[in-house]
Amino acid sequence: MTGKTFVEKIFDAPKSSIVFKKTDIVLSHDNTVSIEKTFEKMGGDKVRYPDQILNVLDHNAPPTNAKLANDYQQIRRFVQLQSIDKFYDVGNGICHQIMSYHASPGMVIVGSDSHTCTAGAFNAFAAGVDRTETAGIWKHGETWFRVPETIKIILHGKLNDGVFAKDIALWIIGMLGSSGADYMSIEYHGDGVKTLSISERMTITNLASEMGAKNAVFPPDEMLETFLGEPIKNGVWADDDAVYFKEIELNLGEGKHVTDGFQLLVIPASKKIYLQAMKEGIIATLMESGANILTPSCGPCLGTGQGIPADNCNVISTANRNF
Image (cartoon, rainbow, N blue to C red; front, side):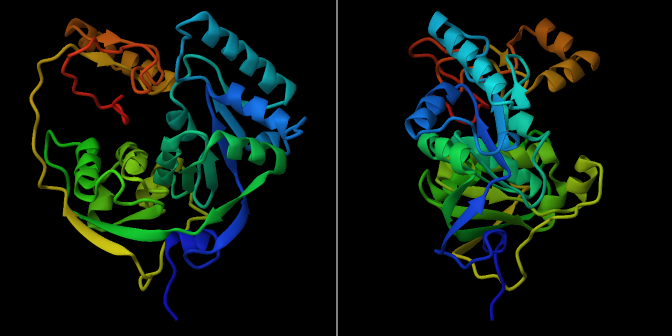
């Protein structure tokens, strides 16, 4: 009898099985207005489990037109009506950063945003779902999953100076292609994992959706335990003899360096990070260097917020989706 992968353990079923599972967290953001309308069409009145819901206003924060401002007001009314405690208003940060305050090992997390997979850095199963499915979870508290096949990526060594987690993620995407991991789970293994901070792991899992993956996950190790500030109780990890669709090995020491020289926009991921950067003098240094500091939000990533470039401009972006 062969061992199990991370997702086979989370869902207690072999690959390709269809399972129903109650979710621990259901994330939504500015699209909550649309989800609420679908929820009502489904006959929804009160959400099944208000404590499941995490809502963050971030994609167009602060609102750039009257319609968006009215949408935000509607969301505020909704979370109050539904007694949703995990609500983060404008300026608190990007939903995936806020998720780091709530995610923990062994959780099943879904969200109406494709980059919900970021929470895999916390040894959780985390995946994006569409708005209709989110509305269904609001009503029923659970949803169905097809247990994905898994790609095992083994990381060796450590990053050189001037090479960052984003470089690793883009390298892997370049290797597999934008659809090379469609509906697959990505597990990160190897001695190189121990050299990556939780922030770096979040960057890597965040971009799993850009190669089509369902989720990406890191192990429940000492680095995560230190971040959480307490012993890990519900950690889940693959067996040594688990069977994989594919195995890939990477040496973190082989990265390259890109020079600077462009207009600089800086968007802190959350209010907490913004305040930390201010206390450490980082914000002042950046501004003195000519940087524009924007509100903690998704900024230009979505293509509708602040910081959108003009036509025919060359852009180097560390945003996850470069629209």
